[in-house]
Image 1: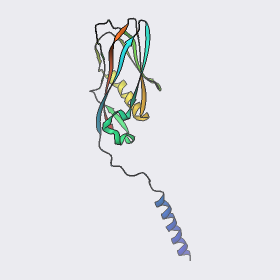
Image 2: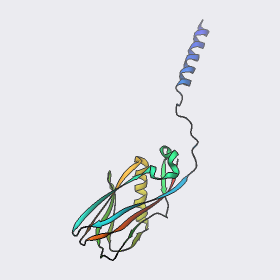
Image 3: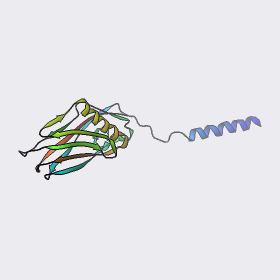
Length: 171
């Protein structure tokens, strides 16, 4: 009798353990995937104004990872990434106190200083800031990157501040 009870107990525990198994379907994850995206801010300003522009950056913007988006564990920024300002037209442009900041995490901010013409930001500090932005985007899946600047001059012809984000995603 004790053997039968012991057998039933072991059988019941085995069924219980088996039924509590992982319900997630197994997904064959790929190796690292590389993708890039360019985000642009259109720069205009009335004279003497401080302008704030928001841009939403989403993990889903990177189409190469669309079916694996929820499995992304980290993103590694490539040195091909950059921030650049492209002046359009002949207007005198002087953007002062140009800053980029993740709206939900004010610790992730970067001061680009004063911009007066075509400029490319590719130094280590520039890339470190972009890596912080990528880290935040991977962890939150979506962030808002805020650009703030002031201008003493009227800027009516739209120029562009671009962020080229080139990432290798790991799963």
